Amino acid sequence: MARFLDIAHAPRCVLFADGVGNAVSASTAAFVGVSLLALVAPFETTRPVLRLPGQSLSNLEAAVVLAFGAWAAALVSSRRRPDWRSPLASAFLAFVAAMGVAALAAPADRVNALHMTGRLLAAFGIYLLAAGGVTTPTRLRTVLGLSLASAFVVAVLAIGEYVQIQPVLSALRAFRPGVTAVGGQLRAGGSLQYPTIASMYLEVAFAFGLGLLLFAVDASRPWRVATLFVALVVVAEAITLTFTRAGLLTIAASLAIGIGVRWRERGPERGVVLAGSLGLVIAVCFISSRSAQSLYLRMTSEGQESWYHASVAAPSEVSLATGGRSYVPVTVSNTGRATWDSRADPPFYFSYHWIDGSGERVVTYDGARTEFPVAMPAGSTAALVALVRAPRRPGTFRLEWDIVQEGRLWFSTEPGAPASAATMAFVSGEGQGGPLTTTDRPRPTVRPGRFVLWRAAARMFVAHPLLGVGPDNFRLLYGPYANLTGVDPRTHSNNMYLEVLTGGGLVGACSFCWLLWRAGGNFFSGATRVSETGLTPIGVGIAAAGIAIALHGLVDSFLSFAPTYVLFSLTLGLAAAIARGVETGADAHRV
Image (tube, rainbow, N blue to C red; front, side):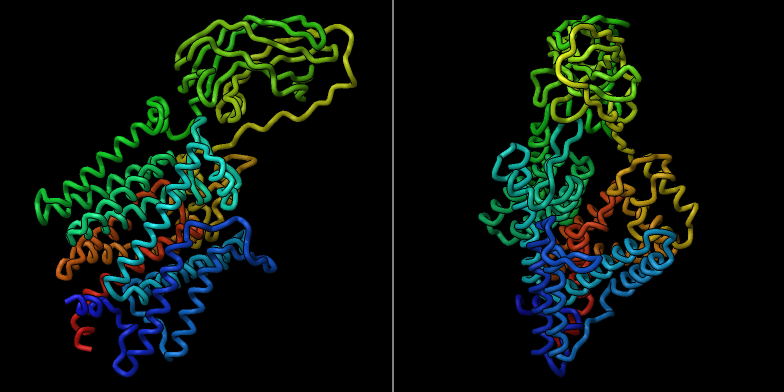
């Protein structure tokens, strides 16, 4: 029976009546390539392994090239070609072609758009690699296990990053320049470039692992069940530490799918109880991962724009001696949402900036710190005596009051911050040292929220409806559509579907919809039709992974990042392989 299952899941591209041995070698080469990508996908380093004119090659991209090369060599030696009839091949290829046309017609940044088309073409190749190499249940479970193992390592690194283990922080510099924070709260990302990318990767791996866990339950392997349970808890904990809300929703969706399918088929049995227990443990880990206020702020607001607002009542004028220390009475009100606490980590302090008499140039930006006597929640007011150190040269200055979250941000540079309260300061006395050196005012932080980006995407589509602005060009062109200057070119539309619509227009969007429709059919087939072969838990895990991608894609965009497009392509390939095995099982068995 086991041998029958191994053969029954082999796509037609690896079973030929006139050359089974050669064909199997091509299948094996594809499987080895898929296994390699499953292991290395989340570990793309920032330093390229090869630099070419106008292009560089990362270690992950080199692994993709190596996998393709080995598979191509095996196909040539066996005089075979990839099976273009695999379930998603035509839709996937149509999508790549549509985005290629959009790239060639891009009104600007055509080279960048063509680079993105190249990534999509590589994704299509990875899909074919998985569909042609994962030909048996054992291979399928192996790829899922390798993906979960690599995600487990990412999760351990993310946890080490969150608790600030120095060797871990040093090791992570190979993958990204620094840490990410929201509202002063560190967002762990492990070896992935951004916390949202890490979350998306771990969400898919979590779904894979859930399928393996339920399979191990059915196989009555208690040690494997315990190992997978612990691994899933660690992966879920890392997702909570990314502080990504969509990640929590997709974990819940995966568990709901697993529990729902099992309950419908078998009632309240061991798998249902185990998946429910897993969800309970994850919920406890989430609740204990941050302070109640941090969780509340993150879960109830789109961004941190409304978190850091203050109202300051201070004297209109003060007179100070050059270089002297003085104390100025002020009244401060917390008009934002975050609690200010000078004993927290990182702490909040009351401070100031020295600005020259014109109000344009900064004399001293980092003012002395004054602690808040007690924690100040939203809506509270406190009277302070602020420590002020005067400039070392006489003159008329502006003393602009501000609040700092140490090492993270100043309130005055946050998006939507109200105008700083200011006191005119008359500094007199003998000057100390040479002339004062002034600097430009820091630019306010530009951090557009999702709704701003989505409106910009809608305007961009209206301006370029047929072929869009070219794949991956939204991030380079959205500034004028969002009425913003000084925008960050790394910011995407925060929606996978809008990213395709703006990049490829109606042509790209229609081809993408076709791909999604075909993929949905394969995921459904994998979750429901493989019950005859005993692979239902694995099919459910792959279906949950597809749903995680589709759901998280509503609020983030991942197609331009190598680790995630590799994992997405593998997921599609696994779904196609498992569905194709059901469809062709009888024919393959006869061969």
